[in-house]
Length: 224
Image (cartoon, rainbow, N blue to C red):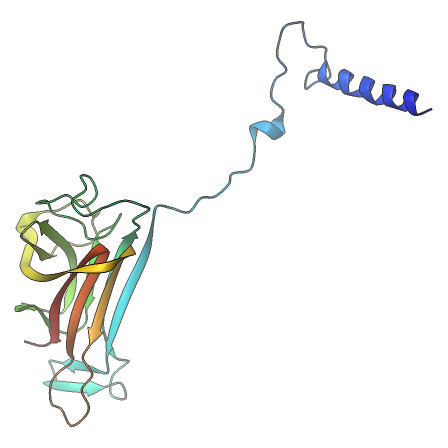
């Protein structure tokens, strides 16, 4: 009884392999066509090689040039923002600084991935010693073996490698530091200095970004 069941089972399998998709016999020596299920196998999603990130700093007042002063959130809608939005590449085992096609020496780098890195400031600020009127800008950088510069461009909303030097607003010297442990993903920071009242100093602090074991920084402040 067991043997007969086994033979029936094998016969069914052989019959299935000898018929085409329409149930017709397959000529000798010809491979069976792929089934519809094999042709439309489900797509397996993969994480992309880079992500998108942003860092935002809030100033608890807005400046109204028409009124000639600073007004808090009770007077106007919400605080003022300083935001850096950027594509975030990852090391993935690479030594990226100075690597051709990634962060080459002596060439403008998008300071991110994919779309250009964007600075959007709702207040006038100073980065390094350069005054930046409120507005939207693109941030590039220029890495060299003798030092880095932050490049602020008036051109916006372009692919990150589309750089036009005629649109430069400023090139700002950056401080450089070597980290003991590498940073896996490019990261920006807008770090405020904390000052207790009754200080009359406008908001200020450090703008910093790091990738791998390289950290770059400069100072920022609201106003001139």
